[in-house]
Image (tube, rainbow over the protein chains, first blue to last red):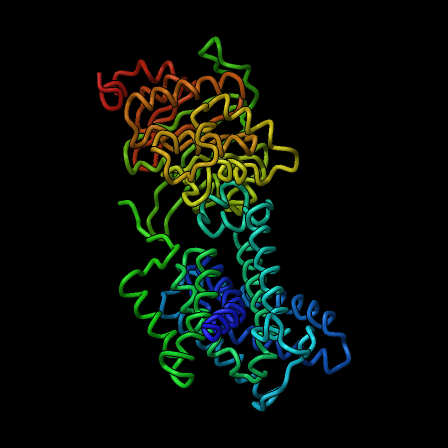
Length: 290
Length: 246
């Protein structure tokens, strides 16, 4: 019994990291109806930026903030330069572009930083596990950070004028422009935010899995499955789905399919959700009145 | 200056003037050089059948369709400016299909309407509730669950939140039961009397539109075929046969 509890608690810890990436995916999907397959690789690249800063002597939290700023700006620039022209492109063209972006980030990271696994520091100290040995300090710290970030993002969208404008622009771009919202700028802002959220996830997961250019491949899959499970149209669903995926991954890895096959649970969940409940747990079925 | 209705507020010069306005969707030309005027504080009706180019005219004004010729708003040429920039010049738009933010609450719809405002919008919310008490009852409700008539009220209230100097209304009667249409037009008369906003009203329902307008233009396949004071247009034999049905 204690074993199961342990798996669940540490599943919530990794799941909260997946939840961040799920949320980033859903934010972009709501605004553009596109899935940014490069979301994970962008996060990985941001994490390398953080590592470079830390190795250059910048203190951890300084590097953390600088990385967020860098990711935010890079996300906006990426949207402006590469993705705006794709806004009206057919689905396959944009899927191709996102996959291309994934490969480009992966290869550039490998080229600059090599493919060797690198340890990434944790700001939460190495000390003994807590909660009766169930949770490492880093797991607890990263869960706390992710929760703070997710709450802040939620509050921003829920309570600020800019957050409301971002939601409006995502849901109904035409009406938004008619009330004076610069929709193009909102899209860039959304991309910046998603990139920054992803960067946090990258920096939080790196101490657990070690940093290498392929670090986010698995994370992106779990996050994507989490976003679908929660409902690709629901930010709350994305967070819940992401956390659930962390728990499912752990339980399946420990008791059902074993660690070698646990990534396949993500794929199974993707298929099952798409076949039986494409709108996910919290999502809305996209229907048009005709 | 035409002033056919005694209750009409005193009108100034034109706030919007179209001269030789052309508009097209790609190769398909819809407007073939039309002229019309909306006077400050006045209500101009743009009448015509389906496909005459009424909605296109509104889209040209708010920069959603490319246009040539002159569109002068408040003395400034606004052809092909960005839609959000035109909105920021306090042009309110009640679009066809109502443009509801379905996923958001009634409150959030109204707040988005006031996006360009720098001052407090709380008093305006109260003002909208005075016009549309139904919206107050549904303040926290998701806008997508509102009835068609309520969504039309929401669209008008949303456009008024911008404190428009020019209000564009695209077929506010569309798809609504006659009783609801009458209710909405009663409220609109109230708004016209108190807000003194200049209005360009596009309608298929000519008698309805002529009951609130002081100027009217008749659009047929992208050309203005008749114009004049609303009272005169209403008396015109051919308009009566073709558009008023009596």
